[in-house]
Amino acid sequence: MLEYLLRLALLLPVLAGLIWGSLWLTRWLQTRLGQTPGAGGGRQLQLIETSLIAPGMKLAVVRFRDREILLGCTRQGLVRLGEAPVTTATLPESE
Image (tube, rainbow, N blue to C red; front, side, top):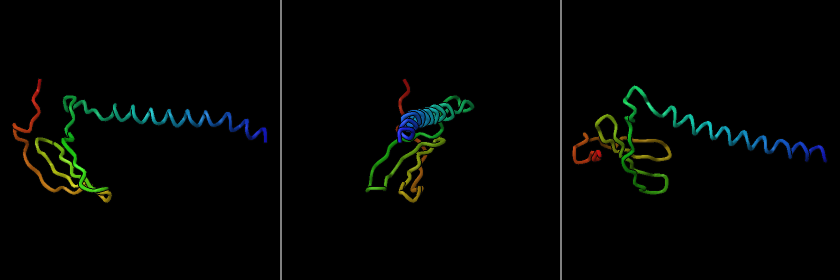
């Protein structure tokens, strides 16, 4: 019984360290791989706004390649509901 508790006391911190390390590595890789250097350092897809309709159902407006796309998001998937070109009135002001 004492041997079991000693093994448990040694392996639990090792397991916690492995979990923490894998989460840190995942977050680091997401930030590094999410940037596309060929596109001028900017992202092509931008989330503009979301609105909760009901539990598990959302509306989202995304900007992709000079178009704003309205998406319906449910637990089953995404549906494109509409699309419009970006006008100068909807573009954010650059400083």
